[in-house]
Length: 234
Length: 234
Image (cartoon, rainbow over all chains, first blue to last red; front, side, top):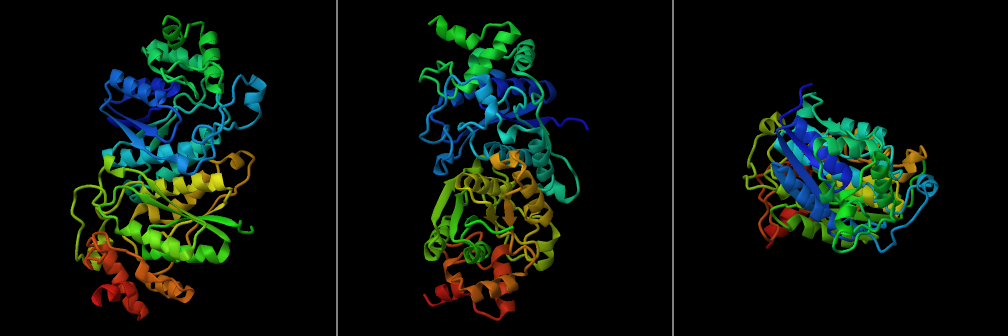
């Protein structure tokens, strides 16, 4: 199936989604970026999303307000401490408290809504099932089930056309491979943020699971993280 | 499978979802009602949702703000006129402009998020595949696909437990049957609103598809609509 001209990309402002944005732009002439103010405890991520979207000159960047704090239940949206300095074994052991219930389901649902309005068939999301935190909604089987549901949710699906495609170009890549691919495509990782608990100026904590995975990725790729460089040289 | 104590009900404040709330309360001791301020052009629906939730003494009623106007594409969220006085044939003919892309997908996704936080397994939604407006996301096959996806989206699903159940107790009922069942259970339909385009005081237009379907339902049930009575006696 030929790719449509338009695509919607879920953009958190992190390393993964910023790489996915570049990948989508290589395949589609009009890329729409969608971010969420969902009750995160800091605005660093969204500031990065704005910079990444501007730098990539997307067709449009929408930041939707959805207040998941009304439900609570996660260290990212509730008054619970983000775990720090966990070992690889600890990280692999169980789903961490940073998991936000149904977050990807909600994000992809909004992506689907926008795609249907735009008449775009392609939705990109930077989920990853290798160097990740064990979130259920990053698994390939979840994505496949979402795509099947989406293809029964739209107007066009009533006519029997399975037109929606959920693209997860990073799903089988290690963090190292993602970084190598992104650098080859010209992603400026100094614009991105991965930290669950950054300082107000965006300086990453370097101790949460997400910082540790990012560190490992850059280290294995044999490249310095330009975000760390930026703050070290200050 | 035994029903869990808790359930989440999507409550629009309309006739259908208010009936579903009563049905859920007959089966679950703690019922949580979820409504959305999604960019509707009027607040009548949400005022009704509040009154219905209060009257039913739900465990908690949350109204989430999600601004679907940023995407546009529907008469309910965009500056497009709501069609009036359409014939049955016209209504059956095509999906109307009042369709909001991916609305039920989004609503159910938030229902799933709240259910997971609450540790509730049961989510109720008043979709109807008989006397409805041809919306794709009211079809049984869509609901089944959403449930399958939901059972791959949660923490518990990682352990292989298919615990989420999407209940659609009205899906095969005519409007007449819904009204009969609701009246038998004591639903006060004077608290509800079905109109796509009501006056500021809640007086229904009596000409949009939703008003016409409601009129037909009460007429076939051989009962006067207490909402119409309320405004006639003013």
